[in-house]
Length: 76
Image 1 (cartoon, one colour):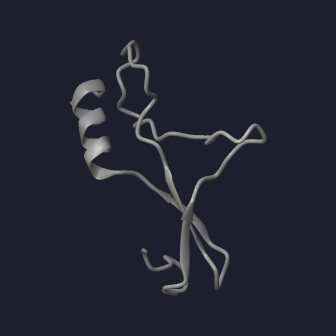
Image 2: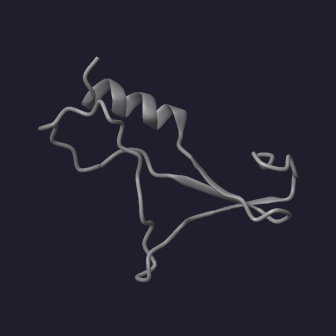
């Protein structure tokens, strides 16, 4: 598990930030995405982490998925 970005604690958990219907609420879409790019995905899914010591919640994305999305759907 990653260390907390705020307090450096190793007591972190991975999860999802969900809406009230039980679905993940967000994906990451780079600002350089082509305006009329057709894709079924809006970008890589966010991976959420939370610190059990200070309460910080943060998101990351898969570098592989992000690189593939940018290469296919973004302006250089």
